[in-house]
Image: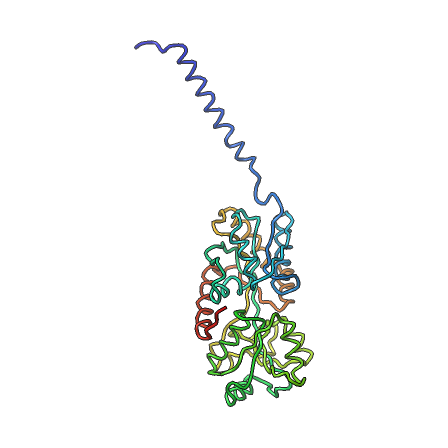
Length: 336
């Protein structure tokens, strides 16, 4: 065998030393990468401050901050029924630092009623459901209607005469009203308002000359103060069973004509699509721990919310909700 030249031996030796050094340094370099989260997290809320989604976002943000050890900043980006804020998150880097606390409007309904919405539910990674609230059908005292049976009888005998108001076209409140019309075979006019405040003013002021709004659909937490004060009459909540928050208010589904009525508003924590699994798992654990915390549950229930079960498959739940909303949109021919 011919001897290996000394120059070649030195070259191989230096290469081997370099390779070993690289292998030794690689784990160290990897270990030095900052663990998630290493900086503040932003939660986008697609509505102005003060509404139910904003409140939910701030409550979730506080819980995540406490559990992840980083500040959580709430960024309110209102407009287009929550769609502008949702679009920002759908387009963000999937690194766990831009999240969305969204409601059923922007996550499941908007895409069905307007072509202006460019994102799809597939553009998000679901971290988990947070809570839900039923809606409530209410009547103006001036209408003389005291319960769901009175409502059905009055509207059935006077097709097209009566109106109901909601907080806008394509909202959960609007779809709930159309579900009632569909299942009860009722003919009513929908009057969309730019938010809950003007709807409340007209409904409460129904005894004023020229005001002909007799009925309205509210998120339960928004309607409850007016129900308790006697300014409006609660006819029933819109989920399949009575809300544990208001067990004295019947579910509309208790009436035979509305036996299949089951609709509400829900809130979920979402991230952009393609979120790395370790980041997803860390966020999911933080949310699950929060949902199991008695203190956090008490805060949510105080807002009229039903706390979501941490075991719910969020992707399947949202898909089933989209199917339900699609049928209502097609029935009512809702389009913006």
